[in-house]
Image 1 (tube, rainbow over the protein chains, first blue to last red):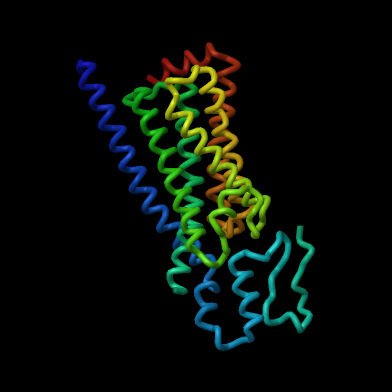
Image 2: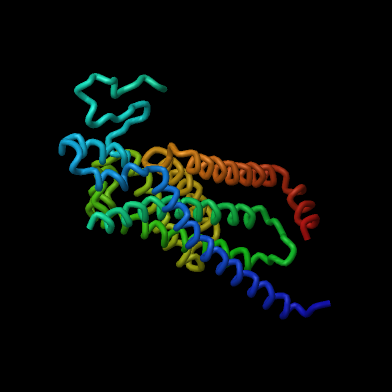
Amino acid sequence: MREPGSRIAEARRRAADAKQAALALAAAGFLAIALLARASHPAHASSASSTSTGSSTGLSTQSQDDNGLNLQPGQLGQSGGSSGGGGAQTGVS
Amino acid sequence: MIAATGIAWYAARAGGMLAYLLLTASVAVGLLLSGRARLQRWPRFALEDVHRFLGILAGTFIVVHGGALLLDHVVPFSLGRLLVPGAASYRPVWVAFGIVAAELLAALAVTNHYRRRLAHGLWRRLHMLNFAVWGLALVHGLTAGTDASTTWALVLYAGSAWLVLALLIHRISLHWNPLRSTERSTQWQ
């Protein structure tokens, strides 16, 4: 039978361990989510390097669309191909 | 400069998502506490300590989220637009949900600080507003989050919402049947 004092000290230590684990998990989670976010939008990283290949207006639109600036639910963004009438908007609901 | 902007942009997104997940964890532990669940090896004061720490950590990552948005140039945010609901140029209504959630959380943190000076009933009712904070943060993430449509983000949102709703339903069921609550408490020991 353990003394109440030692049980309290043990619970305090357990809480301190849990807080340290939460801190470590948060740091790891932050990196993991940042990497997932980067992997989800590879065009964001590549748009800067492809600046010289297209018109400035088209690239600007592409960058905004990749980052979710102008996209509305059910709308597909198109940048350079707007003149082709490719249907930049859909009626997906 | 481009690299720095990129880092800030990813830090903003990761910080926001992580703040929401930590808020979920804090709410989940809070629901366990309010349900008077007595877990072996986990006395109430220890759970309260972890609950408080998770809330502080969530607040820290909200600051990271906002600070990174200020540094980032992908979505231009000034301090005013970051603090005033509805002033943002990007999806103002949905961003406002996040701003209101963060400011409400800050206000609730102040009430926690002065908890001993407040009547317990008043503090408890104010503390319930943390559910509103969590709900606003969920809506903000789903509607204003860049990653909201990705599979991994949807899994995280769905999982966290399921956890909180399940614990909330469990808690409400205990409220309507306090006898069962006592029985469960003794079972969990």
